[in-house]
Length: 98
Image (cartoon, rainbow, N blue to C red; front, top):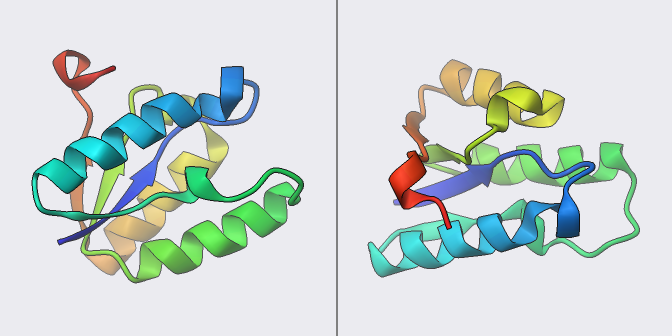
């Protein structure tokens, strides 16, 4: 299953990349294909990141929401699109964090 990883990035240390990368690794171990926007390079605009991320999301079978996703306007938009597309929604639980 292709799983898009969504979560807060703006304003967090290292743009929350460690949490996104750990989630991608965990999903890979579960035989999923992680679609991780946190691998995009620095230097793009927020609009660029959203455009690429939403395109990735449209190719996914599920969305994986990192802890704190509700505090991110981008992740909330991705969640809303995932619901519209009928994707499976998986929320990270505290015991899976790290």
